[in-house]
Length: 223
Image (cartoon, rainbow, N blue to C red; front, side, top):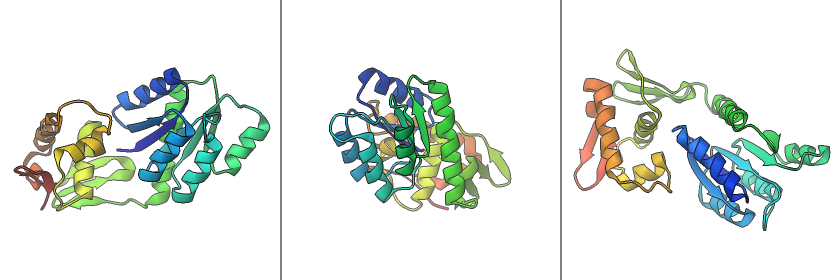
């Protein structure tokens, strides 16, 4: 599941954007209230896309953009009240992919982020395929196939299967799966993992046998 960073000092706006993207079920969202917090998250995590305000306590969004660009080519969106031509040009010069001026439409922001992620995926891979036995995932188009049949999966089950395939042969504990698929700030029970694994196996039919339960450990996939 794509991991997003949002750095915004307005509590109300930060919560609005975070909750909107998280509620779609298609994003893991980390957020920070100032530049220092944002840089700390960038230093320890890998992000697929970032939304940055510019005027922030401590380090600015421009500073975060510079630091992020040193370690990642992920799409960067500036979301700011600074709408002058000089600021817009500076944002793009620093490596931003999109520049939106407040007030803004949350739906348009979401659409732009999806488009940026799709373009980024195309640039990264010419149809990279994840596979285990007869199960195959085509990440660029979020397609899952079991044998010769396409399998429709809800977002959480898709990303759960993707994470397991990316770590094929390795045991992933429930806490690790929660972090990777639901996000570090998820406050529900670890049993939600068991529930989604059960649903995922059912949707995959006999091919779901590749998902093994490791008693006291978690889950792994093996042919």
